[in-house]
Length: 178
Image 1: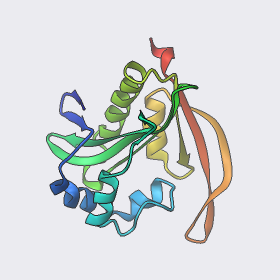
Image 2 (image 1 turned 30 degrees about the horizontal axis):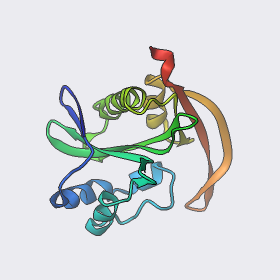
Image 3 (image 1 turned 180 degrees about the horizontal axis):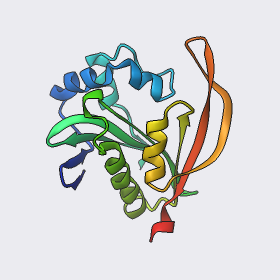
């Protein structure tokens, strides 16, 4: 599956040969810090990239996750995902990261817009939600520019480098834009 708009291409699959490229992009301490998860590997190796690329994304014949590899001008530059898909309540989590050499070009903003459209049109999702660390202002700007609202704040939820940080919970009702 692919989603295309201008210079942006979101691909659901990439060849194993691209695992090295993915590892180089993801092996950036700012990414592991900003995504707010202790499970994001650091250092990010080719083996970690292959593990991610081969993740199970289906249970009981239902997809619970879509990972799209973001390409900008035909160059791999990041990942955006829809995960924890709840078909009954029609909501899912969205997350993304962009390699450092591709930031501040609107790539995350455009990718998120495309994924929101995909979630509504193809998955029939009603809502997307995410959490953003309190210091990750750029990611909050990406979400707000795509119509996400702050729904709450979780204090001292993430322990990093000897300090606790909070998460903003953010969500978007997709059907509001129809």
